[in-house]
Length: 149
Ligand code: DQA
View 1 (cartoon, protein in one colour):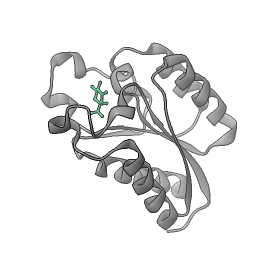
View 2: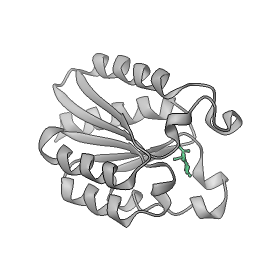
View 3: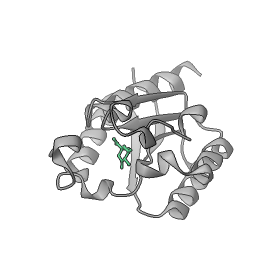
């Protein structure tokens, strides 16, 4: 499969600390390593990836708004904003783009506060618990969705 589409891969708060942050939960891969792996998979799929991270909710919202006209799909790990942000949910709705939610950890095996997601109801699907490989699965899924649509 080779399609020509641009995907915004968004990372929320504290994901800039990957590799250092709780490696027993999030692994030893850094965000730069993860970005490189995403570009490699995207090349195979014929996707272009715009890979970003922010610790600021409003910045994430602004990037999602821009994606409405600049990208063909969104892969998002909103970090802790997953569990709190109606604003990010609203911006994903207004983007009118296919959204795949991803988490490195299995959020359902963790504290109850992580069991609810504001992203899931507006996403085509959610991948969690597979570490960095989940991002590659998400790119596969979004390529498939765009190809099919
Ligand atoms: C996370 C899970 C969230 O609960 C947490 O706040 C994160 C990372 C994950 O990738 O497993 O920051 O989204």
